[in-house]
Length: 327
Ligand SMILES: [Fe+2]
Ligand SMILES: [Fe+2]
Image 1 (cartoon, rainbow, N blue to C red):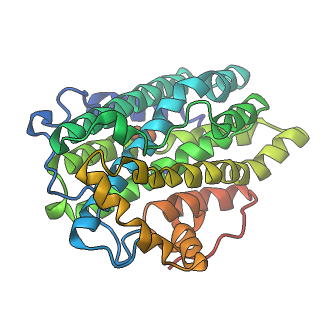
Image 2 (cartoon, protein in one colour):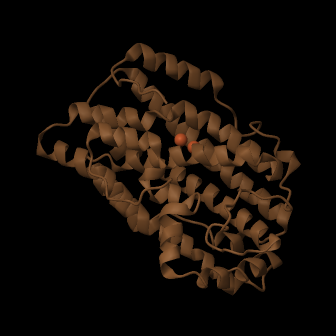
């Protein structure tokens, strides 16, 4: 991804035209009529099946499908969060530090694309329930929600005080969602075709607007001075990690609600049968899986998994917690 200067009006204008021209529409971005094939995986798993080593074929299919839906919901919950933060993290910043109209128009395009992505992931969730014959309300109990959480209010308060933690969270989720697609692409023959195509279309727009969060961070870097500006520049990346972490871990723990749902559907029964595999793992291994090795989860929690993030954080000389190295 190429960094753009927030004051390079010509380049911003070109980028805006490209995004507008190539934008897709929710109704025809994919062929929704094919529905979901419940015999297919949604996400490739690693050799330890995220955190359930020794899972059977049936268990790994259910884990792959639930993980795929958790990933979709995490992305769409973050995307749904954006309008609630738009005033403090975006509008107020652009009003305080006026730039050309292109940055605002790019922002409107960015927010519109994210709202559309959230709708697309919700639509997929409904189709998955139809295809697998699962009750939507039951499945929804296992999926992440961000509305009204401590995480959301911490990010809003940071933005109100002039911080940029919001944009660090956005750039985190965007980089992870691009990496997720690369994993899906490598295993595309085994992945539900609708899931694959939806993530392919998501990737197209994510890669096109991936620089927007960094544009906002650069604008704040260039304009915010004084002790408060220095503090936010140094601390916000770590703050974004610190408030996101308990949210991610807490939402993942909703998995254990499958024990109460096991009699509602064979899908939940199979998932509940995976719990002993997780419980058999020593505590240290569970932590290692979460922060170093488990795909998707550790990618979100450990910044060492994210190269774009690493480059910008180094450039900003922001403080970073000493996360374990990944290979
Ligand atoms: Fe998106
Ligand atoms: Fe995005």
